[in-house]
Every structure is written in C-alpha cells, then in structure tokens.
Length: 129
Figure 1 (tube, rainbow, N blue to C red):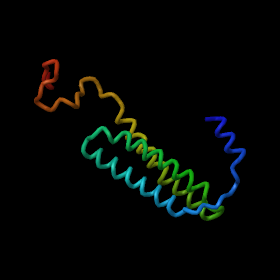
Figure 2: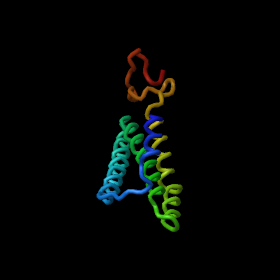
Figure 3: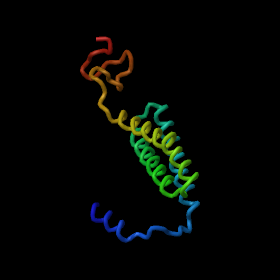
Figure 4: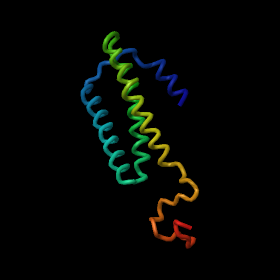
C-alpha cells in the first residue's frame, strides 16, 4: 500500500475537473443515511449485526469529513467544513465506532444474552442460580 500511495502522490494532478460531482456527494450522503438508518433499526431490535453496519457508517463519516474539508474553497467554505467536521461528522464517527466496538466485545461473565429470564442454560442452571 505504501508504494501505491507514494506513486499516487507523485503522479496525481493538484486539481481535477469532475463531471459527476453532484452524483458523488448525493451518493455519499445516501450511503450515510442508509448506514445510520440501518444501524439504528438493527440496534433497536437488539440485533448484533448493527456492529458491521455501524463500523462502515463510521468509516464513511470519516471519509465525508476528510473530503468536505479538503475540497472546500479557502475562506468561509473551509471554515464551515472544519466546523461541521469537528462538531458533527467526527463525533458521529466516534459514536458509530463505539457502537461497532461494543457489538464485538465479549459479554461479561454470567451475562448470557441468549438465555431468556426463567429459561435454563445449556449447563442446566437457571438465571437465578
């Protein structure tokens, strides 16, 4: 990856004209909205699959902040992009990262989420002892 990155840094032009600029940003925002909605729906249902969706959404939020700041014009536009990154996109990315990390953490000892209250676990013990 390092040689590829160095090669890009040496060969890419400092500016470029993009013919599908609106589609790029609308598509990214739609992916973010889908990830946020999906994470919320899965989390509300107690579905552990919210973790990968939250991780992807957090990564997209970081990319969004990065591109917003680096593509903003100098001056007021850049200040707005920096403010949005600092106050919205980066905190949201951290939140989604925490949700993703918590989804893969092992449960605490004695916390068997698969055993419903009053049921017996595989070893024959009941939740109350």
